[in-house]
Image 1 (cartoon, rainbow, N blue to C red):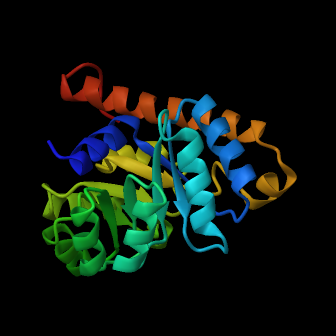
Image 2: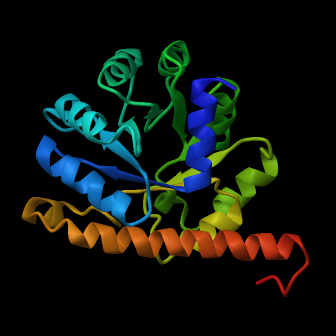
Length: 229
């Protein structure tokens, strides 16, 4: 199994990808530590803010031995190259870029390609991306859209992102998401600016427990234990 596939396997085991937007390396390192303390050993660093590559490098240097470190908001092959050199082990894109997928594979990185419509999902899935990031999930109304896509593309791995949090994560897990991507539901900009890192640990723990509970219920139902809901 290649490095990218190993990374993706671990992402699926964890089931949650917290994402942060920060141009402050020190705050980002503290945030990653807080998220890990909440039971989620993975973080996605958005490349959108100023100084983002320095942030990614700092987090990877501090935490790559104990966490999976990824780069988000990557839109092209050059972004993949820069993220790889800064220490990313996986790439997340908001939309589809064949060049980004190819470059990620060249560097041995897992890549989750953004898509929304059935056509976009089909193209992204056929490109060799490890998973399709359904984004923004809130635009579809609820998890029924993901369930419908799963019916048409049963071999595609989906990560639900954008508006997924504690209140609805069970719906997306039950609809077939192999993982969920979360942003402000764990790391909101106000708490980050205030240095309130402890709240990120509390939110991470709650979300971790909710996803584990949802997966446990699905497993019991697959075994025919109890009544489906």
